[in-house]
Length: 239
Image 1 (cartoon, rainbow, N blue to C red):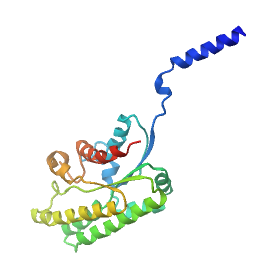
Image 2 (tube, one colour):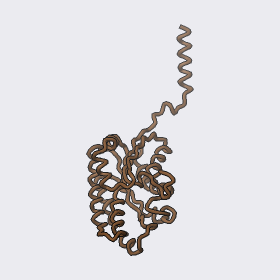
Image 3 (cartoon, rainbow, N blue to C red):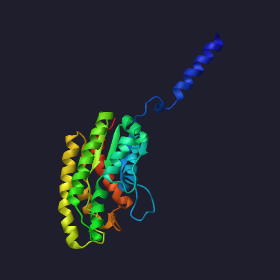
Image 4 (spheres, rainbow, N blue to C red):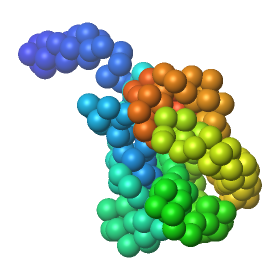
């Protein structure tokens, strides 16, 4: 009997000596990133792959949240590609169904591909490309809502990526109203589908020489700035 009492006392002592953290259930979230090279994390000098979703993942960790992170973005992806991935890729489909947070950027390559046609003196239609990209985003958001209506979904608005590119000032000036209209339509489509629109235009514009030194891809500081814009909205829905 004394041995039983002694063992019980030792057990109680061991329990009391355990850190309090072991008794607190750590919050867990599933975070899925979809999109193009910006979500993939292709940096301006190609020295590192660390995009805005990587920083968002880090922000979750800093909040003490156990984040299960999956990045399904593809460099060069158009809105057609992202939509197709959502509809046909079993890994992406499963991730959507279990995601608590989803971030998306899609449509920039649709517009850039039209500008490349202009460079090659081919017929180009950036307005038509932007309309098609908005339609694809609408379909993406409806697919996500069908599979996981409880997911928090965030759609990135676009910054002016033409600053460092070899286009004439006239071409850049013609593109800017199209970009603003694209962002306005993207916001409307996003919010109509119950998702969150994340503007990034001004945060990059104010520092474009530092954030956009070479091409359309941001530096790591630029991606962190974009991630902070996302986090302003995402932190309000933390568990």
